[in-house]
Amino acid sequence: MKRLFFIGYMGAGKSHAAKQFAQASGRPYVDLDDVVELAMGQTIQAAFLEHGEAYFRRHEAKVLAQVIGDTTIQIVACGGGATCASGVDQMLIRAGHVVHLDPAIEVLISRLLKQQHRPVLTRRGKPFDAQGIQNHWLERHACYAFAHERLSETVSEEDFRRWMEL
Image 1 (spheres, rainbow, N blue to C red):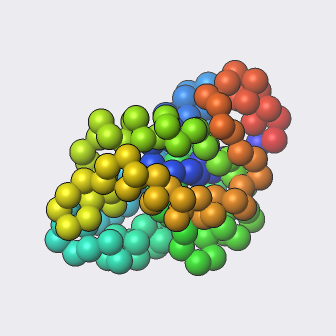
Image 2: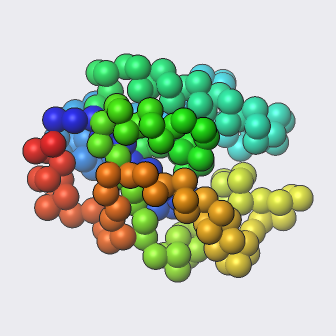
């Protein structure tokens, strides 16, 4: 089986899909956000508050390169902004099969308005509203266009079966 990378906007279900597929396939997986937090020794939210987004993105890119280099990791849930960094698209394409999880913007807005731990969705200390989330989503959407496949619906057993055959 090819390595599988889940990409997409925040709240798209990347972590959930990676964990479910790992359990179904018996293959090891990581959630990039968890590995980045471990490497930084602090939460993503704390890193944003203390050092800013650029600091976090440098660590994220470094950790992603390490994860890609570790071929024992078969399934990766990438952070929502990880694929916006220059060259990441080609690294992922060469390393495996890339799946863009892309639920409707209304679904994402509903999920994200319930979550307070997304530091990138805060400007000047104030959380984004629905329009702010949609604008940010539009800015980022091109960062996922390189994927081998795009799923706008919930990941299904059929998807799992197809990925097992890759």
